[in-house]
Amino acid sequence: MPAPLFDSHCHPTWKEEEAPPAEVLARARQAGVEEFLFVAIDARTARRSRELAAAEPGARASVGIHPNDLPSDPQALEPALEEIQSLAREDGWSAVGETGLDFHWDTVPPAIQREGLAFHLDLAHERDLPVVLHCRRAAPALLDLLQGRGEIRGVMHCWSEPSEHLAAFLDLGLHVSFAGNLTYRRSGDLREAARRVPADRLLLETDSPFLAPQPRRGRRNEPGFLPFTLACLAEVRGEAPEAVAERTTANARRLFPQSRG
Image 1: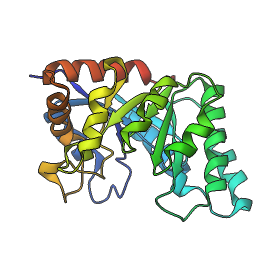
Image 2: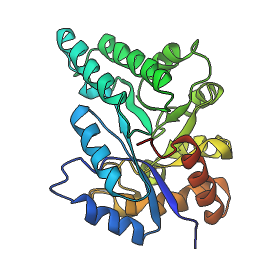
Image 3: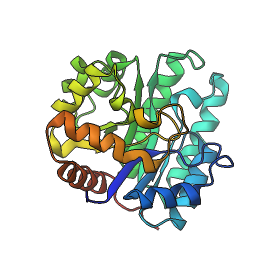
């Protein structure tokens, strides 16, 4: 039996009326997933994630605004970020984010995404918290903004960029996390990246309710499906699932300690 698993990135607040978090988490624990980072995409979900985490053993919460959820109107950006800053200065957080760049969608101008990212990076430094980074079709631009800041404590969540960029992010000190898309049949380059991540920087996640792994593809994803990604990751790396489970859980605990308060 593998060691208890840590889902380092999930969104139980997403349309939770369709999947009550208490039921979702109960199923996760039955599947051997016992620790979680509930990740915010805006101020509302940050508050709700913290509320849920306070009631669930082994759960942590993040605070931040997803790049696709930043206001597209520059006039609305400052008050949105000020609200996040005020929240982050309270207790109850284990990470800042998710933040980053997403050039797949065009709902939020790149300039606003860059400003939001810089704000979150500064906030993470101020609060001495790790940062959760989202990157979609934006690796060169994200690297441009990260390099020069020194070592960064945090994670490239749901790695999906070309493997040629992996080394540069690792050089910044970042962890790298893999989700259900690792299991997809056409994810050869993604699996190549998974082979190359050092064992002490490796994390597992579901990004639920998105990206259900291949055996459950087409369904709403949930933390209880994490063992499918574990099995694929272990196979890709030529390691025992028990060893990968133990290592990724230890890495996540070290990166995302239980919050103060």
